[in-house]
Image (cartoon, rainbow, N blue to C red):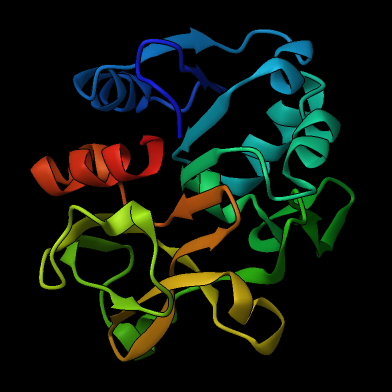
Amino acid sequence: MTSKRSLKVSLLDYGAGNVRSVRNAITANGYDIIDITDPSQIDEADVIVFPGVGSFGSAMTVLKEKGYVEPLRKYLSKHDRPYLGICLGMQTLFESSEESHEAGHETEPLPGLGAVPGKVVKFDETQVGAVPHIGWNGRIDHQSSPVFRHVGNDEEMYFVHSYYAPIVDENKEWVLTSTTYGGVRYVSSVQRGAVVATQFHPEKSGRTGLNIVEGFLE
């Protein structure tokens, strides 16, 4: 991507709670961090990392209140500017989610950033068993990517989520990897151009996760 010395990683923290571990994963790879505190910083960023845990609705509400939604949509629109979304940071890239609804419009899914076609849905406990999906799991590659250049095919990543993005015809060109849980195969990472996002948590995936972060930032 560029040299570690010159590249500044802009971290988008909306109060999700897992930012420290993400920060450590970035600095462990030798990169400096800028914290995004104003919408104007989004367009100025070399690369954006958006970690997220919690509710889709809460995340989108905070992004909207802080004035980040439209700058993020612009940043993502041409797929040529480096972006790494983690967990909820991936789900918010989709058009909508079942998880949360607009106040007063409880039957309508809350819109996401809309970069990736599709709607995030909840695992069916009667089908998969335990929800949320917590623990280590593998991947099936749908395309090659430098993101996994330092990661073996049999290495596993750490997942914690109750909602997932189904693979549909409209988002197949985005699907980087898929993962199967309880017989349900779903999107576990996406990439189009410089935009990358993972359902799993690289920052909780040990050396494998650090290598994934390094592969993205290199």
